[in-house]
Amino acid sequence: MLAAYISHIDCTRHEMGPHHPECPERLGAINDHLLIKGLLDYMQPYDAPLATEEQLARAHSALYVKEIINSSPSEGYHHVDPDTNMNPFTLQAALRAAGAAVQATDLVLGGTVPTAFCSVRPPGHHAEHAAAMGFCFFNNIAVGIRHALDVHGLERVALIDFDVHHGNGSEDIFRGDDRVLMCSIFEQGLYPFSGENATGPNMVNVGLPSRSGSDKFREAVEQQWLPALNDFRPQLIYISAGFDAHREDDMGNLGLVEADYEWVTQQLMAVASTHCQGRIISSLEGGYVLSPLARSVAAHVKVLIGAD
Figure 1 (cartoon, one colour):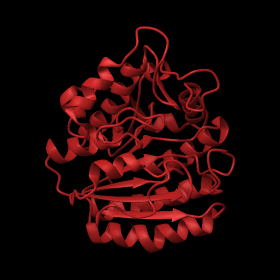
Figure 2 (cartoon, rainbow, N blue to C red):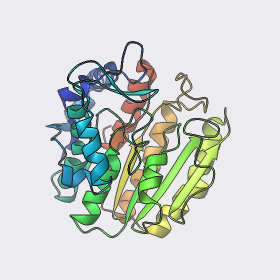
Figure 3 (cartoon, rainbow, N blue to C red):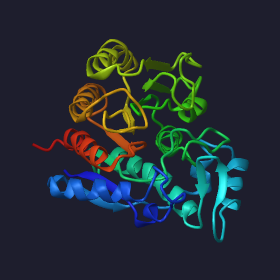
Protein backbone atom coordinates (compact mmCIF):
# COMPACT_ATOMS: atom_id res chain seq x y z
CA MET A 1 0.00 0.00 0.00
CA LEU A 2 1.47 3.34 -1.07
CA ALA A 3 1.76 6.32 1.27
CA ALA A 4 0.05 9.57 0.34
CA TYR A 5 1.92 12.61 -1.02
CA ILE A 6 -0.45 15.55 -0.77
CA SER A 7 0.28 18.90 -2.35
CA HIS A 8 -1.20 21.44 -4.77
CA ILE A 9 0.07 23.96 -7.31
CA ASP A 10 -1.90 26.66 -5.47
CA CYS A 11 0.56 26.35 -2.59
CA THR A 12 3.32 27.72 -4.84
CA ARG A 13 1.35 30.84 -5.79
CA HIS A 14 1.38 32.32 -2.32
CA GLU A 15 4.38 34.57 -1.74
CA MET A 16 5.12 37.32 0.76
CA GLY A 17 7.55 39.53 -1.11
CA PRO A 18 11.10 39.43 -2.50
CA HIS A 19 13.69 37.59 -0.41
CA HIS A 20 11.12 36.30 2.11
CA PRO A 21 12.46 33.01 3.54
CA GLU A 22 9.07 31.26 3.34
CA CYS A 23 9.20 31.15 -0.44
CA PRO A 24 7.42 29.10 -3.14
CA GLU A 25 10.69 27.44 -4.17
CA ARG A 26 10.60 25.39 -0.98
CA LEU A 27 8.03 22.99 -2.41
CA GLY A 28 9.82 22.63 -5.73
CA ALA A 29 13.09 21.77 -3.97
CA ILE A 30 11.33 19.10 -1.91
CA ASN A 31 9.48 17.58 -4.85
CA ASP A 32 12.58 17.51 -7.07
CA HIS A 33 14.72 15.85 -4.41
CA LEU A 34 12.11 13.22 -3.57
CA LEU A 35 11.81 12.50 -7.30
CA ILE A 36 15.57 12.19 -7.78
CA LYS A 37 15.82 9.87 -4.77
CA GLY A 38 13.04 7.66 -6.13
CA LEU A 39 10.89 8.18 -3.06
CA LEU A 40 7.87 9.36 -5.02
CA ASP A 41 7.69 5.85 -6.49
CA TYR A 42 6.49 4.74 -3.05
CA MET A 43 3.82 7.43 -2.80
CA GLN A 44 0.42 8.11 -4.30
CA PRO A 45 -0.01 11.78 -5.26
CA TYR A 46 -3.14 13.63 -4.22
CA ASP A 47 -4.24 17.19 -4.92
CA ALA A 48 -5.09 18.91 -1.66
CA PRO A 49 -8.73 20.05 -1.49
CA LEU A 50 -9.88 23.39 -0.12
CA ALA A 51 -10.70 23.27 3.58
CA THR A 52 -14.22 24.37 4.36
CA GLU A 53 -15.13 27.06 6.86
CA GLU A 54 -16.72 24.36 9.02
CA GLN A 55 -13.46 22.38 9.08
CA LEU A 56 -11.40 25.48 9.89
CA ALA A 57 -13.78 26.50 12.67
CA ARG A 58 -13.01 23.32 14.60
CA ALA A 59 -9.55 24.76 15.31
CA HIS A 60 -10.18 28.51 14.91
CA SER A 61 -12.92 30.91 15.89
CA ALA A 62 -15.52 31.35 13.16
CA LEU A 63 -15.00 35.10 13.38
CA TYR A 64 -11.27 34.73 12.78
CA VAL A 65 -11.86 32.46 9.77
CA LYS A 66 -14.15 35.11 8.27
CA GLU A 67 -11.56 37.79 9.03
CA ILE A 68 -8.83 35.96 7.10
CA ILE A 69 -11.16 35.24 4.19
CA ASN A 70 -12.24 38.86 4.02
CA SER A 71 -8.63 40.09 4.24
CA SER A 72 -7.61 38.48 0.95
CA PRO A 73 -6.38 41.31 -1.31
CA SER A 74 -7.27 41.61 -4.98
CA GLU A 75 -3.77 42.96 -5.67
CA GLY A 76 -0.61 43.72 -3.74
CA TYR A 77 -0.17 42.59 -0.15
CA HIS A 78 -2.21 42.65 3.02
CA HIS A 79 0.14 42.73 6.03
CA VAL A 80 -1.02 40.49 8.87
CA ASP A 81 2.11 41.12 10.94
CA PRO A 82 5.63 42.39 10.08
CA ASP A 83 6.66 38.98 8.70
CA THR A 84 3.35 37.61 7.43
CA ASN A 85 1.65 38.91 4.30
CA MET A 86 -1.25 37.85 2.09
CA ASN A 87 -1.09 38.20 -1.68
CA PRO A 88 -4.08 37.53 -3.98
CA PHE A 89 -3.29 33.78 -3.99
CA THR A 90 -2.59 33.32 -0.28
CA LEU A 91 -6.13 32.43 0.74
CA GLN A 92 -6.35 29.59 -1.78
CA ALA A 93 -2.96 28.28 -0.69
CA ALA A 94 -3.89 28.44 3.00
CA LEU A 95 -7.18 26.64 2.35
CA ARG A 96 -5.32 23.93 0.41
CA ALA A 97 -2.71 23.53 3.17
CA ALA A 98 -5.38 23.01 5.81
CA GLY A 99 -7.42 20.86 3.43
CA ALA A 100 -4.41 18.60 2.93
CA ALA A 101 -4.43 17.70 6.63
CA VAL A 102 -8.15 16.89 6.47
CA GLN A 103 -7.67 14.77 3.36
CA ALA A 104 -4.71 12.97 4.92
CA THR A 105 -6.83 12.19 7.96
CA ASP A 106 -9.62 10.72 5.84
CA LEU A 107 -7.17 8.66 3.77
CA VAL A 108 -5.26 7.25 6.73
CA LEU A 109 -8.25 6.56 8.97
CA GLY A 110 -10.14 5.14 5.99
CA GLY A 111 -7.36 2.62 5.43
CA THR A 112 -6.57 3.88 1.93
CA VAL A 113 -2.98 4.76 2.87
CA PRO A 114 -0.87 3.87 5.92
CA THR A 115 0.90 7.24 6.23
CA ALA A 116 0.80 10.64 4.56
CA PHE A 117 3.14 13.56 3.95
CA CYS A 118 1.60 16.95 3.21
CA SER A 119 4.02 19.06 1.16
CA VAL A 120 2.13 22.30 1.57
CA ARG A 121 2.56 25.94 2.44
CA PRO A 122 1.88 28.31 4.10
CA PRO A 123 2.87 26.50 7.29
CA GLY A 124 0.53 26.46 10.26
CA HIS A 125 1.90 25.80 13.74
CA HIS A 126 2.16 29.48 14.78
CA ALA A 127 -1.49 30.20 13.89
CA GLU A 128 -3.47 30.48 17.11
CA HIS A 129 -7.18 30.00 17.70
CA ALA A 130 -7.85 33.59 16.68
CA ALA A 131 -4.58 35.01 15.34
CA ALA A 132 -2.31 34.65 12.32
CA MET A 133 1.43 35.05 12.87
CA GLY A 134 4.86 33.69 12.03
CA PHE A 135 4.17 33.02 8.31
CA CYS A 136 1.01 31.07 9.31
CA PHE A 137 -2.69 31.76 8.65
CA PHE A 138 -4.56 28.55 9.51
CA ASN A 139 -3.14 25.86 11.78
CA ASN A 140 -3.11 23.06 9.24
CA ILE A 141 -2.24 20.22 11.58
CA ALA A 142 -4.75 21.40 14.20
CA VAL A 143 -7.52 21.43 11.59
CA GLY A 144 -6.61 17.83 10.72
CA ILE A 145 -6.48 16.74 14.35
CA ARG A 146 -9.86 18.22 15.20
CA HIS A 147 -11.27 16.47 12.11
CA ALA A 148 -9.93 13.16 13.46
CA LEU A 149 -11.40 13.81 16.90
CA ASP A 150 -14.71 15.44 16.08
CA VAL A 151 -15.63 13.74 12.80
CA HIS A 152 -13.91 10.35 12.99
CA GLY A 153 -14.42 10.02 16.73
CA LEU A 154 -10.88 9.25 17.84
CA GLU A 155 -10.23 9.60 21.56
CA ARG A 156 -6.44 10.06 21.73
CA VAL A 157 -4.24 11.83 19.17
CA ALA A 158 -0.57 12.79 19.55
CA LEU A 159 0.97 15.88 17.98
CA ILE A 160 4.75 15.93 17.54
CA ASP A 161 6.49 19.21 16.68
CA PHE A 162 10.25 19.25 15.97
CA ASP A 163 10.41 22.65 14.27
CA VAL A 164 13.19 24.86 15.69
CA HIS A 165 10.48 27.35 16.76
CA HIS A 166 7.91 26.57 19.42
CA GLY A 167 4.47 25.72 18.02
CA ASN A 168 2.64 28.35 20.05
CA GLY A 169 -0.44 28.19 17.85
CA SER A 170 -0.91 24.47 18.33
CA GLU A 171 -0.39 24.87 22.07
CA ASP A 172 -2.95 27.67 22.15
CA ILE A 173 -5.53 25.52 20.37
CA PHE A 174 -4.94 22.28 22.29
CA ARG A 175 -4.08 23.41 25.82
CA GLY A 176 -6.30 21.52 28.24
CA ASP A 177 -7.71 19.20 25.55
CA ASP A 178 -7.00 15.84 27.13
CA ARG A 179 -7.67 14.08 23.83
CA VAL A 180 -4.41 15.53 22.48
CA LEU A 181 -0.87 15.02 23.74
CA MET A 182 1.51 17.61 22.25
CA CYS A 183 5.24 16.87 22.38
CA SER A 184 7.55 19.59 21.12
CA ILE A 185 11.25 20.36 20.93
CA PHE A 186 12.43 23.86 20.06
CA GLU A 187 15.36 26.19 20.54
CA GLN A 188 15.20 28.44 23.57
CA GLY A 189 15.14 32.18 23.04
CA LEU A 190 13.77 32.12 19.49
CA TYR A 191 10.51 33.43 18.05
CA PRO A 192 7.77 33.24 19.27
CA PHE A 193 9.56 33.43 22.65
CA SER A 194 7.24 30.94 24.31
CA GLY A 195 7.09 27.31 25.31
CA GLU A 196 9.42 27.33 28.29
CA ASN A 197 6.45 26.88 30.61
CA ALA A 198 3.88 24.40 29.37
CA THR A 199 0.36 25.80 29.47
CA GLY A 200 -1.37 22.51 30.21
CA PRO A 201 -0.80 18.96 31.51
CA ASN A 202 -1.13 17.63 27.96
CA MET A 203 2.00 19.51 26.82
CA VAL A 204 5.51 18.01 26.83
CA ASN A 205 7.64 21.03 25.96
CA VAL A 206 11.41 20.66 25.68
CA GLY A 207 13.30 23.88 25.09
CA LEU A 208 16.91 23.19 24.13
CA PRO A 209 19.79 25.66 24.39
CA SER A 210 21.46 26.95 21.24
CA ARG A 211 24.01 24.54 19.75
CA SER A 212 22.57 21.55 21.63
CA GLY A 213 23.20 19.25 18.66
CA SER A 214 22.17 15.69 17.97
CA ASP A 215 22.92 14.12 21.35
CA LYS A 216 20.77 16.52 23.40
CA PHE A 217 17.96 16.32 20.84
CA ARG A 218 17.92 12.53 20.94
CA GLU A 219 18.20 12.48 24.72
CA ALA A 220 15.12 14.69 24.99
CA VAL A 221 13.14 12.44 22.67
CA GLU A 222 14.13 9.29 24.54
CA GLN A 223 13.69 10.63 28.07
CA GLN A 224 10.69 12.92 27.68
CA TRP A 225 8.74 12.27 24.49
CA LEU A 226 8.74 8.48 24.27
CA PRO A 227 7.62 7.71 27.85
CA ALA A 228 4.78 10.23 27.53
CA LEU A 229 3.70 8.86 24.17
CA ASN A 230 3.71 5.26 25.36
CA ASP A 231 1.70 6.19 28.45
CA PHE A 232 -0.80 8.11 26.30
CA ARG A 233 -1.24 5.32 23.72
CA PRO A 234 -2.28 7.51 20.76
CA GLN A 235 -4.60 6.17 18.11
CA LEU A 236 -3.02 8.43 15.47
CA ILE A 237 0.16 10.53 15.35
CA TYR A 238 0.49 13.88 13.59
CA ILE A 239 3.84 15.57 12.96
CA SER A 240 4.42 19.29 12.54
CA ALA A 241 7.54 18.66 10.48
CA GLY A 242 9.81 21.68 10.56
CA PHE A 243 13.37 21.23 9.35
CA ASP A 244 14.83 24.60 10.33
CA ALA A 245 16.81 23.08 13.23
CA HIS A 246 19.27 21.81 10.59
CA ARG A 247 22.78 23.12 11.09
CA GLU A 248 22.79 24.69 7.60
CA ASP A 249 19.57 26.66 8.23
CA ASP A 250 20.21 30.12 9.65
CA MET A 251 16.73 30.42 11.17
CA GLY A 252 18.01 28.59 14.25
CA ASN A 253 21.11 27.16 15.81
CA LEU A 254 20.32 23.72 17.23
CA GLY A 255 22.70 21.99 14.83
CA LEU A 256 20.70 18.97 13.70
CA VAL A 257 21.48 16.95 10.54
CA GLU A 258 19.52 14.67 8.22
CA ALA A 259 20.34 11.62 10.35
CA ASP A 260 18.50 13.19 13.28
CA TYR A 261 15.30 13.57 11.27
CA GLU A 262 15.64 9.99 10.09
CA TRP A 263 16.21 8.79 13.66
CA VAL A 264 13.31 10.70 15.24
CA THR A 265 10.97 9.44 12.52
CA GLN A 266 12.08 5.88 13.29
CA GLN A 267 11.21 6.42 16.97
CA LEU A 268 7.78 7.77 16.09
CA MET A 269 7.14 4.95 13.63
CA ALA A 270 7.88 2.48 16.42
CA VAL A 271 5.36 4.19 18.69
CA ALA A 272 2.82 4.21 15.86
CA SER A 273 3.41 0.53 15.21
CA THR A 274 2.78 -0.28 18.87
CA HIS A 275 -0.25 1.89 19.50
CA CYS A 276 -1.94 3.08 16.30
CA GLN A 277 -1.51 0.55 13.50
CA GLY A 278 1.43 2.51 12.07
CA ARG A 279 -0.74 5.53 11.27
CA ILE A 280 1.18 8.81 10.98
CA ILE A 281 0.37 12.07 9.18
CA SER A 282 3.18 14.59 8.65
CA SER A 283 2.78 18.15 7.41
CA LEU A 284 5.54 20.58 6.43
CA GLU A 285 6.26 23.51 8.70
CA GLY A 286 9.66 25.30 8.65
CA GLY A 287 12.92 24.81 6.78
CA TYR A 288 14.14 27.70 4.70
CA VAL A 289 17.50 26.87 3.09
CA LEU A 290 16.53 24.79 0.11
CA SER A 291 19.23 22.10 -0.03
CA PRO A 292 19.18 21.03 3.63
CA LEU A 293 15.39 21.33 3.62
CA ALA A 294 15.05 18.94 0.69
CA ARG A 295 17.62 16.50 2.10
CA SER A 296 15.99 16.51 5.53
CA VAL A 297 12.51 15.96 4.14
CA ALA A 298 13.84 13.02 2.13
CA ALA A 299 15.39 11.49 5.27
CA HIS A 300 12.08 11.91 7.10
CA VAL A 301 9.87 10.67 4.27
CA LYS A 302 12.07 7.65 3.55
CA VAL A 303 11.29 6.28 7.00
CA LEU A 304 7.69 7.44 6.95
CA ILE A 305 6.90 5.46 3.82
CA GLY A 306 9.05 2.42 4.63
CA ALA A 307 11.34 2.76 1.62
CA ASP A 308 14.59 0.81 1.50
